[in-house]
Amino acid sequence: MKVLACFLLLSALLGACTADSPPPETQPPTPTETPACPNQSTTIEDGAALVGEPVEDDVDGDGARDTISIHMDPTGEAECRTFLTVETGAGSFSSSAWLVGEEGGLPEPRITAIVDIDSDGYKEIVLDEATGASTRFVGAYRITAGGLVWLRSREPHGLFAYGGSVGHLEAVGCAAEGTIVVSTAMPAADGSAQTYSVRRRTFSVSDDKLEPEKTERHSISIHDLERFPEYRTSPFGNCSPN
Image (cartoon, rainbow, N blue to C red; front, side, top):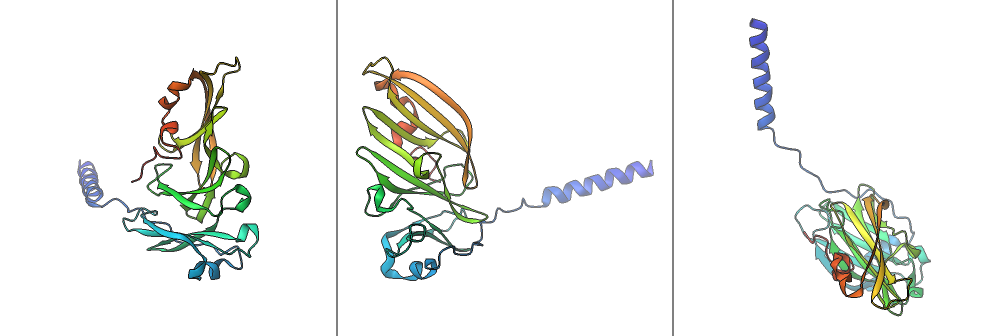
């Protein structure tokens, strides 16, 4: 009986300690990467290399506003010409960006949105990086334990398409928690101008990679296309801004 009583007392004490202990806090990432480009640090430090105006938002989830900016060295190689930078309370994160360059149809990239794509509490930075006759293309960048990384799409140039014309309509947005959806709509094979075939591919986000989850196919009226949320607010307009 004494052994049982001691066991019960010890259990109660451990339970009380556990109840009183606060949950561990989630710490924002700390920069660890070494610049891959020899001109990266000097380009970022050069005020004349700034593209557009910096944007402020809380990217790393610590409650403080961070500064997001784009810097460009026109003399650099393709992978060392443009840099996206995030200044946080923990330090500075940076990554090469806009690898498609002016060949993508834009004179320079621009910040399009800052949203939490995968619902992990950290926001992704979305850049307009290329344009076609009726379609735009964005790149997405996210802070991970390894630094600021490019979340490459599985489409050409690693970018996400949105927009289009009557011949094709693309969109990208958030789906269930932790996943994104990439959609393409094209006129039905029977030639009907009012019916579109829609392919919706869902991916989970893991560090700088997209892992395929599932593919849906639908045949709907062109007037019903916006029943899919990604088509109402592309690109990533239905993702959480918080």
